[in-house]
Amino acid sequence: MKNIKITVTLSMEVPDYWLVVENANGIDVIDIGDGRYLDFTFTPTLVNDGFKHAERESNDQFTNSGSEIVSEYDAMMKILTTR
Image (cartoon, rainbow, N blue to C red):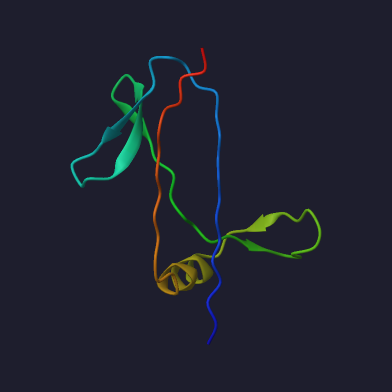
């Protein structure tokens, strides 16, 4: 068995009123106002051909089995002021 480590970095320009807050489970989420929150999670997605721009195929069994093989998951969110 081997280990594959995947690092994803996402940068977004967001309105000034969006805030990173901790939810009741201690997980960082983005408060986007009006009682709504934005969370980024890992969800494996099956594609028809990994070498072309392929349409995604919805497959709950694959998604569930993909989630089961993840041994470590971490997401960090922070607001950077660019003024």
